[in-house]
Length: 622
Image 1 (cartoon, rainbow, N blue to C red):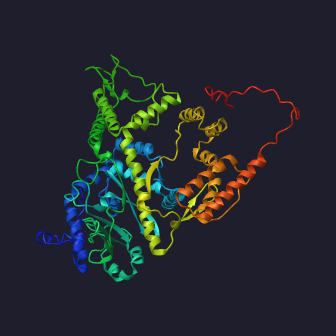
Image 2: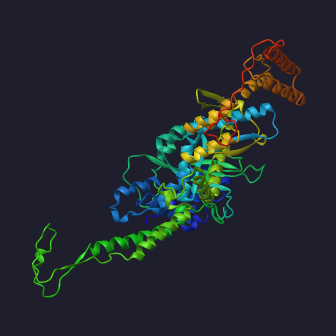
């Protein structure tokens, strides 16, 4: 097995020098900081070889590839290895389990929702716009696509990470391979390290474009060399770049630092005043101590290895035993040439030969193989039926299928919650970076794709203090995917009065609750938009007859009351009263005129209310 040698980042291999390098790199001399960081990372890499080896094993099992390392250079060496089919996993239970649970959990698209705590109407409107702002950042960076990869990384490596940073004046998301990150295992015993280092290979030209003032130093730097076996044939021109963070020791401490460095050159450094690292993380299974999690692949790797060994035994047994045996009695005069595979062969002799088909493989081997497969799937919390996209026999109704899914999903509660937290962390980090860009550039706009048009939102319209809101994550879709479960859910919504029968029929064909809710709330949004313009900007738009006048009157009275409580300007309060007065006039005109006694056409006989087959338990449903 090829091991990764991280001491090539400039760390001296002599033990006496390794013991004397400055471990407090954030306090070292600026000219020596890059060299100190290289030695720190080299030392951490030496003591972190077990984690790197486990990553290599997990990647081999999942990818069914004889990979030699977890970095680009080592991965490229696969082509130079004379691998055979014997190196392949013939029944890859790890990949089957990982892909199944990824499809189950990562199909959800958790949406961060910003809720105000005791905020006024202006704060609530900012919170709604902040929802859209984060949606725009997610859309720009394909956050949900990255989220699926991050979830799969967690299942294979134990941790899936996304780096959030500023890139050419925009918020940028980037997938991080866990093997690129290093923390001190002693410092991170309780899971909260004070420093973190990322090491990756970057194209030399890209790095020069990012730091043009360091062009000469970048050109002098040796090409990327992480593997101790040296270089391999490749056409890329990459250099190994380190990025390090040290958290401030206290609220007023000045020792927080962020540094980007080469082997002997510091490319960039700045104070770092945040108490967290710029990584959103999904963790499959937290260990009892330490920073890094345990992966699903690691949990079942012993089962996978036993399956591999058992399948090899079965394969060899079949190869050596053949398909059948022919028994000839001693002294039989049957020529062996007559025993062939020709159709209609004539066999002469005293006694007919006997064809024996012995058991090639013991039944216990197949039984044990099936037990191991079931054990692996149970370790992941899924069934073999789920992996094969099959439903249990006898479960046909939508309610039964949903109950079955709920029972199976209980195993994934903690994993699902961790996946939701990943997107909450992404939103938090994206907001922090957007604030920094806005403070530097004076603006930061994102485009939010809507159903009919693209909306542009500037950070100035959504800027709020962190203590003015709380974040929660919700799934985007509230309906099951299977037709039976969808029908059952829509019927329950309609019977409960959440949606009308016409909407229920539409949802059976195209289940988009978001559109239905948007249309249902459109009237309230229209009225509130006119009132918000008065309260926020002093702009007056008169009410229109098409508004729900009764609802508009009630909302206007609430806005006036809220304005009195919050000491709204008297000019704006007067505009609200004017809006209310015009609503009263429109309502009076819309009232039907009272007809004289005996006038008008006679009333028609009432007709029976039609019944709906869709809603058998809902009286009067049309």
